[in-house]
Image 1: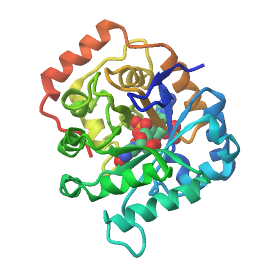
Image 2: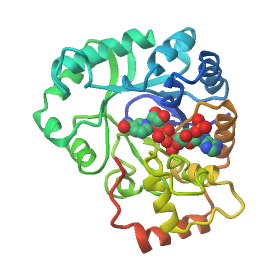
Image 3: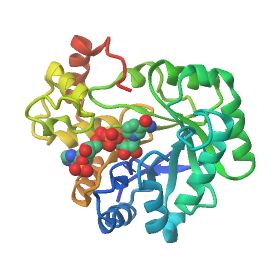
Image 4: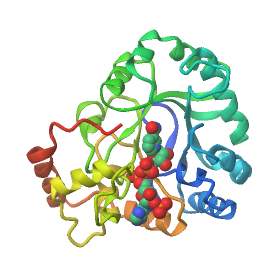
Amino acid sequence: MLSNRKFGDTGLTVSILGLGAGQIGMSDVPESVASDVLNGALDLGVTLIDTAASYGLSEERIGRHLSHRRDEFVLSTKGGQAIHGYPDWSVGSLSASIEQSLRRTRSERIDIYLLHSCPVEVLRRGDLQDTLDQAVAAGKIRIAGYSGDNEHLAFAVDSGRFAAIETSINIADQWNLRHVVGPGTGLGVIAKRPIANAPWRFAERPSGNYAELYWQRLRELQLDPRDLDWAEFALRFSAYAPGVHSAIVGTAKLANLRRNVEAANHGPLPKAMLSDIEQAWQRVGSDWASST
Ligand SMILES: NC(=O)c1ccc[n+]([C@@H]2O[C@H](COP(=O)([O-])OP(=O)(O)OC[C@H]3O[C@@H](n4cnc5c(N)ncnc54)[C@H](OP(=O)(O)O)[C@@H]3O)[C@@H](O)[C@H]2O)c1
């Protein structure tokens, strides 16, 4: 079974591998497959499921297939924009977004609610943070957080208004890890895109694909996973990066989820591999901002 970690000072506990539920939100993923992946995750000891209002059918499917097991997992979702009838990042859109997530996931309370990548200018206003605080006080959400990268993330953390963050952390994306995340902040930390969107799947540059930038970066880093497969190599880096509590690999395949559980259970990468990654990063990556 997977081990768990305290989620910063939030009072929550999360498994070191979480399920990124973006992929099971896609309409070409059959309902039965979504159910198998969601239930399989809980059966395998995954206790954090991450979704968002914008992940297609994901929130609804979590509600449909897991509402009877709602006390077995920590639910993280995100929103604040793209709500019909409200300007993006308005108090109205955030409030409506929270209500929509509660309804769709069939939850009485969202455990972790994250602003879904709003820019610094929005954060500076402070009114969305007030809205989140009110939702916490009303018992609609338990932990208010921010999801994002680079200077937006740094501002969110410095503001002291959030108890949790979700940010890109992987072998090809280390800005957030090196500049913002660290042990001792008290924040709950979720590593998104933890296997860098698996760019090694593409022999040729995947032009226009989400993984394209990471594909390019891996070429430049010239890392060698030695006897590990790439997914294990990548996951053991992010799941055990200092300050990270859970790495949420996205998948719509139960077989991959099982492999990821096994990989996470193998512990941190050996020191020699971490040292190679460090050297490669210093050689070519130290100026790379996080991919947004
Ligand atoms: N807050 C945000 O703005 C934001 C942005 C991006 C992501 N996220 C969150 O982070 C989660 C993960 O991010 P992500 O999905 O973009 O990136 P990721 O977890 O780094 O990579 C996911 C990709 O890896 C593949 N995969 C998973 N396990 C594998 C394995 N063992 N071997 C080979 N391939 C494997 C998946 O395909 P298969 O389906 O074929 O397994 C999927 O295409 C998302 O689901 C979402 O919850 C949040």
